[in-house]
Amino acid sequence: MVAASANLAANLTSSSSSLIANRPFSFSMLSGIRNSFILPLRTRVKPTPLRLASWPPHGSSVRATSSSSSPSSLEETVKTTVADNPVVVYSKSWCSYSSEVKTLFKRLQVNPLVVELDELGTQGSQLQNVLERLTGQYTVPNVFIGGKHIGGCSDTLQLYNKGELETMLAAAKGKTGQP
Image (cartoon, rainbow, N blue to C red; front, top):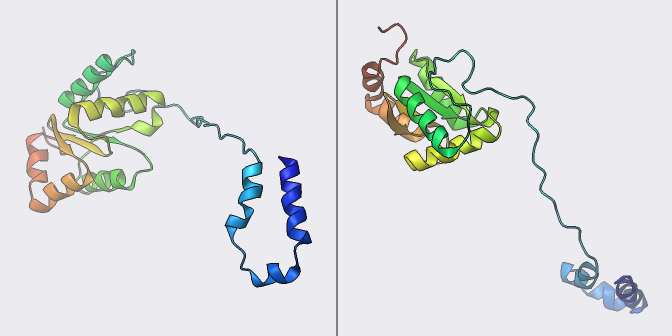
C-alpha cells in the first residue's frame, strides 16, 4: 500500500510540469492515494450522563412509581401518571418545542407535571418507546390533559389558538388555584 503511494507520488513528480500546470486539480486525482490507505473504523461512544435524575421528578405529585423498568411496568407507570395528574408533559430539557409548550402553560398559570426524558438515562429512552407505543408519537413534547393525549407542540398551540386549550385545562382542573 505504501509502495503504491510512493509510485503515485513518483509519477506525479516525474511528469512534466507543463502537463500538471495545464491540468486543473481535482480530488479524483487523489483516489489512488485515498484507496491505498485503510481508514480506522469509527466506534460509537455512548455519552455519560452528567447527573442522574430520579423517577418520578422531585417535587411532583406523581403517585405512580415503579422500581422495575420492564416495558409493561413502564407502560403501567405512564398510564397511571397520566390518569393521576391533570396535565403531564413528557419533554426533553434541550428541546425548543418542549420549552415553548412549558412556557405556554406557565403563561396560563398551569403547573404541569414535566418529565424530562433526557435526564432519566436509559429509562428515559425506554419511556419514550412506551409513549410511542401508546400514542403513536415518538417526538417530544408529548402532552396529556385530563388523561387524554393531546399531541405535541403544534397540536397544543393549535388548541390554544382555537380557544379550546383553556377549556380542556379547566375541565381537567389543571389550573392552579382551582379546587
